[in-house]
Structures are given as structure tokens and as C-alpha cells.
Image 1 (tube, rainbow, N blue to C red):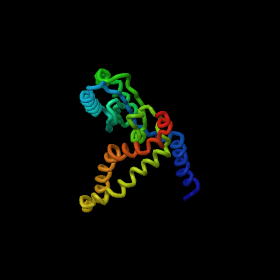
Image 2: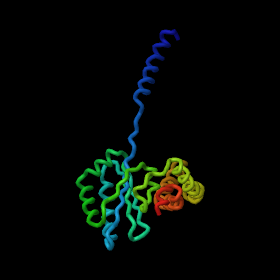
Image 3: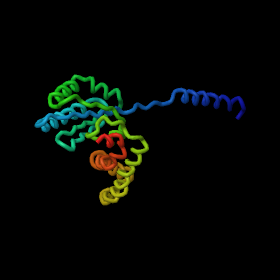
Image 4: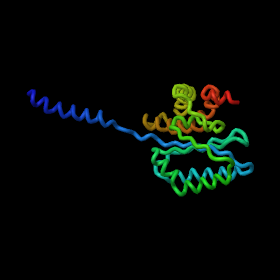
Length: 210
């Protein structure tokens, strides 16, 4: 290949690389909101029904990815609802909707004081505790360690436990089955307990206040 032909191919590619460097791909971060409320005595059942209504309504909006309800440890404790959307924009659309405002008004009639609202990223939602709803998220290196503590026994035992079911399946389907069971297990069972176990280490300033 002649030098002129070589340069004719290379130079446009270099220009393309420079354009990519100047305009890096941007991936929208998920929108996650945690709302903590203290329920009026005797209205816990009504508030739980209202919470289910909020989740059902939010699930009809674009970008809805799921929710968690963290129940209080004591009767005077705070209930915490976590809603997850794929982008902050979709979360904002839900919060500004007439439907959301209607559910907020209903919740306020069942609760005392005002709602405590905190926006977190998806991983931080694993470490949210209803008894300390407004605490700053733990450092990422701490959440990484605690996540590993919770994840290791699940990864070690769950595939073996499911092997009688997944042994005849293609690898990618077997992996999908494992993950489909693993993530809800981590979200609703394992991580809330592990977070409470390490609460004093994850939230040392909150522990000192007690």
C-alpha cells in the first residue's frame, strides 16, 4: 500500500478517535428515592395498604425498576419505602405526577411529622435502615466489603442447591435462573440482616448518638 493510501485510511480513523474522546458516552444514573415516615398509632394496617398502592401506581410509570419496604423494628419506628427508576428523569416525572401527589396527601393523613426523603444510588439502597433513614451513605469501600460478606455465602451455596434444576439447562439459562433468585434474596433477606449486623461499623456516628 502506498504511503498516500495508508494516510488516507489512518487519518480519518484518528479524527474519529479524537471525536470519541471529546464526546464520551454518558450513561444516565438510576433514580432511587428513600422515604421514611412515622405512622400514627393504630393506623399501621392502613398505611401498609397505602404503601402497596404507591408501589402499584409507581409501577405503571416509565422506567420503574422495583421497590422495597423496610418495616420498623419497633411500633414507634419509621417505615421506609424505596423506589427505583432507571433514570433520575423518570423518577422526577413520577414525583411530579398528580397520582404521586395524591398518594403523598393520603400518606400524610396517616403519619406524624413530615416525611424524611433521601435520594441514593442503587447500591446504597441495600444499606438503608429504617431506624437511621437520614444517615449519610457509608463509604464505598465499606459497602464493598459488607456486600462481599453477604454475597459470598449465596454465590457459594445457591448454584449447588439449584443444580438438580439447572444441570440440564444451557449455561446462560442456568446463570439467569441463579441471578433471578440471588438478587431478590440479597435485596430482601441477606443484605438487610448483614447491614444491621455491621450497623455500628457502617454508621459509627449514628451509633455514638445512642
